[in-house]
Length: 158
Image (cartoon, rainbow, N blue to C red):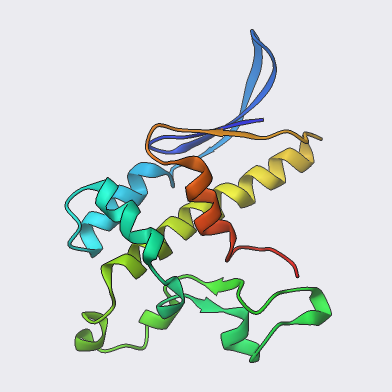
């Protein structure tokens, strides 16, 4: 399966050079990230936001399994660091407290949301289509760095 990360995300089953089929798509892609970064942070350029995400800590605004249960939820194999709800910690904060959240943390959380959406849909489609090879590509992100940043906090069992 080929997953292209562009404005949105497209999931394509590729059987050969001229034998392919679009399986699904998502409107939540690179342009979503760029648009939300511009709305929610002071970053002027996407590259700046991506660099910031590399040093960001999304746990300041994302709620994890550990935040809910005080640790891992080992009965079902969930590690304490897995995100349970994105941006959840922001909901109870006052405006002055929200202004103290760092732009790099917001950027990291947004990047994790985009990757999580892509990974969930990709995994489901790969399972339904009985595919074991997945290739990611896109002009906006350094895909390995993008996936490494995001996958640490997404759906990984201990």
